[in-house]
Image (cartoon, rainbow, N blue to C red; front, side, top):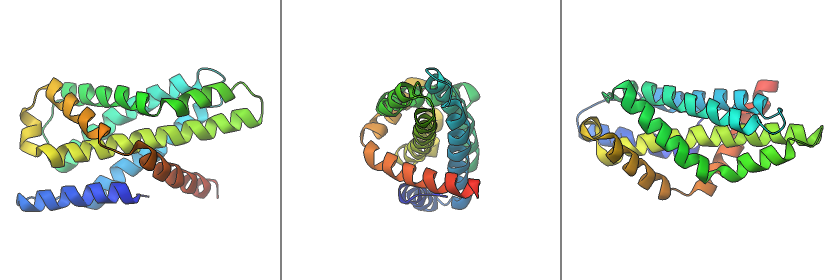
Length: 194
């Protein structure tokens, strides 16, 4: 399931690619991000029930998922980035996003110590935070491709890509993206239970 912000980013990428005479599969690109976001959120939510350490485990899950997602997105878009550069970019985005959504992780850690409702609340917050984390990371990668262009992405240094990704994230309304991510996650989680 994709939200409005992801759809807008993918449409922007599609328009840019068409101007350059290239075709992309917009559904595949949106699905890559949605699949990584929900599988990461479900895995992370399970770690959220572990008092005190679930947030740290969840961050590791989201970071690893972002690296894999970036590799798949690069291939789907036709960007030739080596694995080292993909890992470095994903790690930089992960560190930046951890600071941006840190309140979710802190809240999940604190309430994880409350038996019962706290454990369930922690799992939910951890799932939401990780869905939003990967969802945001996916949108940042797409915006990076649109802003820079595929050929420029391939020639930029690691530091240049990291700086540009951070600038893109700073221009985003994190609260709005997290609100959208929370709503999508709730629907996805509810549909996976039924």
